Image (cartoon, rainbow, N blue to C red; front, top):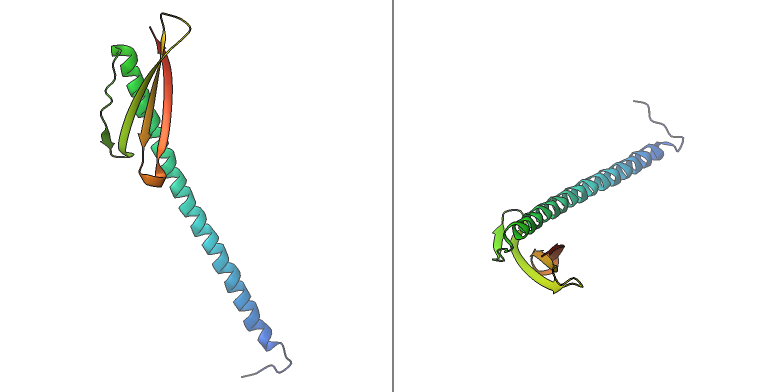
Length: 119
């Protein structure tokens, strides 16, 4: 075996260690980025589901002039609570009906609202 004694043999180990540090940092950033994208996807799916539920209730209100406000447990959103507020408008014939959808628990509480005008 030939050994180098010119003082450069320590640099190879240092270069390998630095390359490993850069590689590990890159992997950590990639994994964290993937985790964040999964979380964003779940939040997006929940908001889409909430919008569909709210729109469905609003269509029910427009069709029947009544909406069921019973709390329910949705498979995607978890516990779901409904509120309705009816406000008078400048027109004597029309009233604003505001539906509010609340879902989530504790610090992850979310609210989505939608209004329509009905005679």
